[in-house]
Image (cartoon, rainbow over all chains, first blue to last red; front, side, top):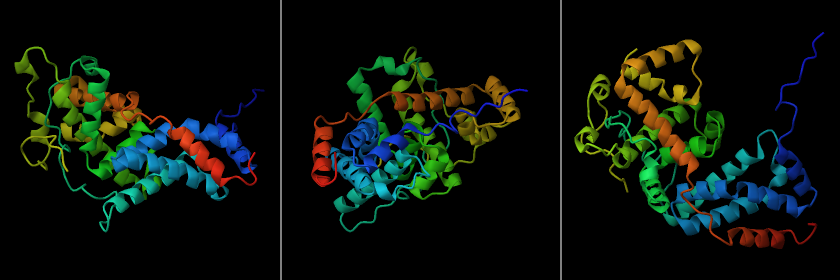
Length: 234
Length: 79
């Protein structure tokens, strides 16, 4: 008779579980290991939300400290990483609130725009378009482009596509419904694509690289304000 | 399948969460529609570029400062 193999991943506990247990037992080195593992992610999330380097540094510090202090409240029914991300997102929003004293800050702001929900720039990109730019120039383009996205789209894109949370985890972290996350993700992806197209068009034969606004835009009911896409919103 | 219908399922196609039947329909549309093919390829590339490039460098010394702050909080009972 065939032996039924356990499904990998269901039996094996996540490696963070052991580290968390060690920290709970008083082993600070285990927490250092968790910090090293997730510091980049936490810093990136903080930077994407606050858009300010000093704030992002403070948020990273505060988020890890808070997670350390509240580790006893961590239930273990979610991953340590997603729990940490939730703390980092909340700390970032709080920081933003402080900076804009008196002004409410929510992940819903600025999302009324329909810009980019209908693709307009249909010109193809160069193969490996990032090769046409130096490292720092490319990083600047990517920063500028994502910073121009409405906050509510940017956070969803960062958590879901950059930091690798699932749609459900993203929804839970941000207090959104799954359909809301899906709709924001599509629009975030399309807006970023649209904005990056300005830089990544095929360059040879400049005529061919002009944006064409044809069938897709015509097929879909127009929701966008006609005009230049990719205008940086402030 | 129309371009609008294709666009509604674009994310599922990119994320690999479509059924086999839907995938076949989407791929058949892609084969016929150059515009949707561009949208599909460049959207996928957009995600890949953001995933593979570090656009915010971690400040040096931040980890050490954090370590010091944690040590300061756990003077009692930490090893």
